[in-house]
Length: 247
Image (cartoon, rainbow, N blue to C red; front, side, top):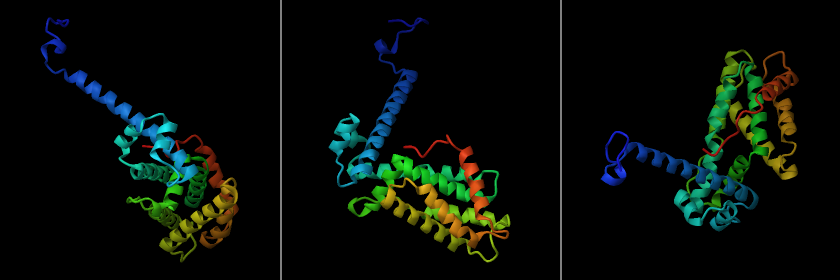
């Protein structure tokens, strides 16, 4: 078969066609990524519902519609699949934090708004909930897992440092210690809310936490209610921002 310019096509000459090869490779990569995301989404639902021990590769295959072989190809093992869900849990948080750090608003308003936004994700986002459950069951998962909390402590310390520079923090506040206390308190509230009401009232619980803590952080005039109002306005303005995904 001759092409439009008179040459023989690669099909008959045996010569390679780089353009066709590149297109085929891209299509294969796209299909592989679609498969990977679909499997992760299904695994997240099952891990969140049944835990690591209560979920098998066969369960994920049956629910997702993909074969066990395809799942093993992409993740290697159930441990690898659990790690994939946890990595998805952590993957988007840095960009999420960057979004809140870059807002044009008082720093403490942004920090409180970030905490409320994260609380919503822990309530509403199955990837986040599954990652949280898997981490709580980490001793049953024989694979190295990402460390939690460290990134949150660092981000909180950065924002508190910015608040100090902006004159929003009370004199004498130890930024590093305050960051650890805030992150510990925030996730403690999550643990209690998860146990008592499946996080249905988590935003109210986090707001109560800030009403208790802000008077110890804010520079005069201390007004935690005003800070919460500002945070909620920022949160309302960011509705529709993409939640952490399965990249």
